[in-house]
Image (cartoon, rainbow, N blue to C red; front, side, top):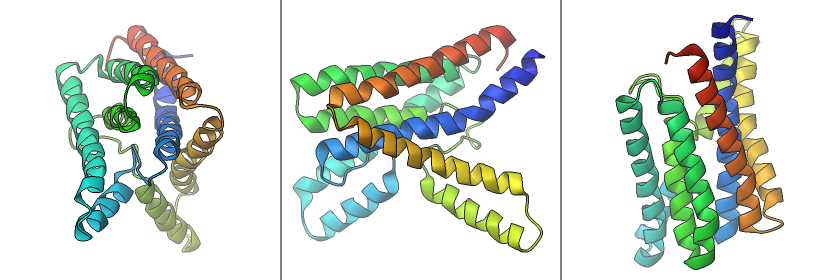
Length: 221
């Protein structure tokens, strides 16, 4: 089989794998703190921090603000890597995410729980750049609302006889990837945080290795 065909097929699966990974990590972080704090889906955090600030709960709001800022910082760092390492950024970004997820396992044992979620938020922000094409065409990997909205729009077009069934299925499956990841993350937290984080860490390492292998095969971005 042509290498370019293999590359296209693998890259086509990446959004689903990364959304699945994000769903796992977000469920783990949410259950770990038990306070309604997400580590990768910032819409809920933004609403929550606004509510806390409006009720003058400034101390509690700091955790949410910290997670949002670290998520944005992760995206910033990831974008810098993508700009400076155009041929290598995919596997470099996912390798960095793997290291962060692994470090969270050890950080959890020596510091406060919130520190672990800060690390996870930074990692999830970084991961958002894994499928960057240009600065204006980065695949948003944690925007579940957008995938549902796109699913609804494509369904409307199908009902009107003007849609593309494959596009509808893709948008639905992107959302479903997050959903299934969250289910897996919830089940993993039935054990311990350290055990739960092993699964996304291994998955992340596999993705990074796959992207490195693919880059070596094609020798192109």
